[in-house]
Amino acid sequence: MRRFANFIFGLLALLFVAFAGYSYLTEFIAKDPLTIETVDGRPFITVTQPQTITYAGPLVNSGYDISHPQCKSALPGKVVGFAIVGLNKGKPFSENPCFEKQWAWATSYDAAAIYINTADPGKGDPAAYGQRIARDTLDRLAKYNVSTQIPIWLDVETLNTWTTPDRAVSVLTEAMHLLAEAGYHVGIYSTTAHWFEITLNAKLGVPTWRAIGKFSDVPTGVAAAKAACTQAGIAGTIPGIVQFVATVDGVTLDRNILCTDPNGLVGAQ
Image 1: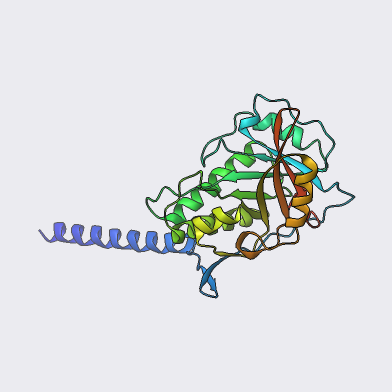
Image 2: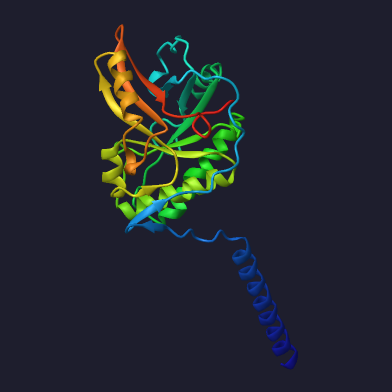
């Protein structure tokens, strides 16, 4: 009887030590939850960006962005300075089926960048969901050997599912932090209206890429984009890139203007 009691006591002691060790280990390696800063009562989304190599050489300040809707279209041939390609097929955790081809085209220009789709299904921990988006993105970037010199833009639009502003802020903050920690510069792509609706106009401490809509022709769009480069846009920021849409010879394309130097906005692969 005593031997059995000693056995039970020893087993319980072993289990206690194992549990304590596991708890210590998981606490040691677990990522501390991020604290969302506030400014003027509004959430402030920012990250510590990784050091980047300054873009060398002249760069034409106009560019294109394309993604899965252009899979069956001819790729633009006009000489521009940069190109941006969508990694996903409209939603997180999906893949642009022609990314490889489009990325090869984009990197034939002087500079390039990538954008990813974001959303919040409203279930579970939003911070964990943001981390999942980032990890999925990193897996896809590794698959295509995308250099950390390539900035990653988070596409924030009402076309995808969003629930509450607090959850949206948490999703985006966590996703950006993991991507930045992995060495990628990050920024936000949106419109002023979409950003307000999704986050209640949370403040931003990262670059912004502002969409201003469709125009009847390219010169009109270019003029509007250049004007928008000097105006407060998403969350009151001055944009780093402005996008407009125009149709030429029956082909509708997203076109972009760099508002400032390209560092942290586009990069060389």
